[in-house]
Length: 185
Image 1 (spheres, rainbow, N blue to C red):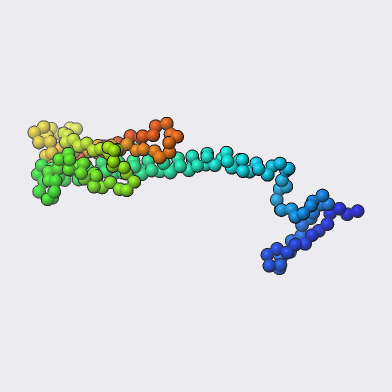
Image 2: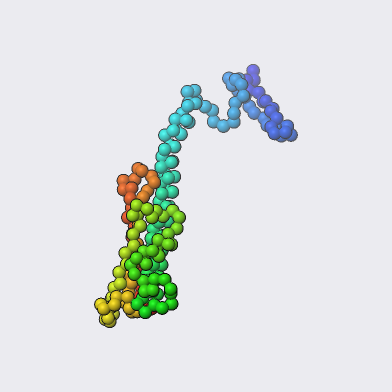
């Protein structure tokens, strides 16, 4: 009258044994876990096919925004470094052999020399503009010689970042950063 029996199967090297209860309606070996419904064998593959594009979009979106953050970090750092570089190469500069005093093209060349890998310099994606300005609250002869000590140099770096992922509405993100420093030499 007993319809349930115990079946002993060896696991691993045979040292450990496990008991499993099988009902009289079970045919063949069953796996441990939840029972499967009839006709549900292909549903996992279908669900995976629906989820995979969403997961890939999220993954590539995170990668693209990481690249955008890397590019913005470069733009802000390049503007700061270029304004520092130009501030020590003013009208009275004698310490450096090259680019003393600095001109607009010298500042652009300096920014191009510090571009790291991963930043696109082709197709006009990176541009640099330099202005020598009078600092606020300072009244001196910055109108005669704009690159005198005490005047300021202002460097703006602009970068057109292109997303790799094509589903974003704006595939180009314009980044710019401006830095201003007082000329010391």
